[in-house]
Image (cartoon, rainbow, N blue to C red; front, side):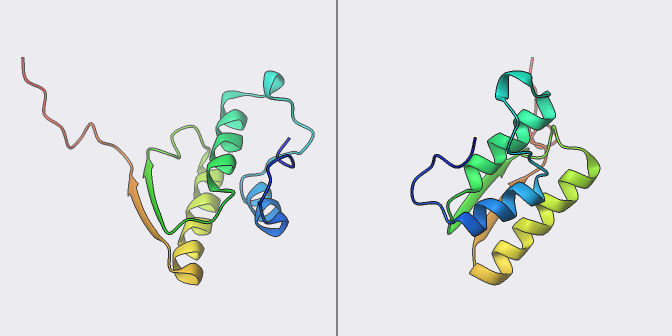
Amino acid sequence: MLNGFPGVDPVRRAKLMEVLDINPDWRMHTVSDGQRRRVQICLGLLKPFDVLLLDEITVDLDVLGRADLMQFLKEECEQRGATIIYVGCLSCCTSHQS
């Protein structure tokens, strides 16, 4: 499923699949919404980045999956010097007018 992308470091791909608990035998038409979201996140992170904006990326992840992903992102910042802007919830920052 995730092997057909050119220019992707296989070590990085394997690490992301481990972090996000992705089974390489999954078929997208048979997985749950949470599993589908993990594959989408993996696809978005396959190639290294300098700056990354994440908007509610963990919304469909369970508690352990969320913690593993946040640890991976922290390591990206520490080891590669990447910058990540993480937004958890914009609804608390916006105002609604009638």
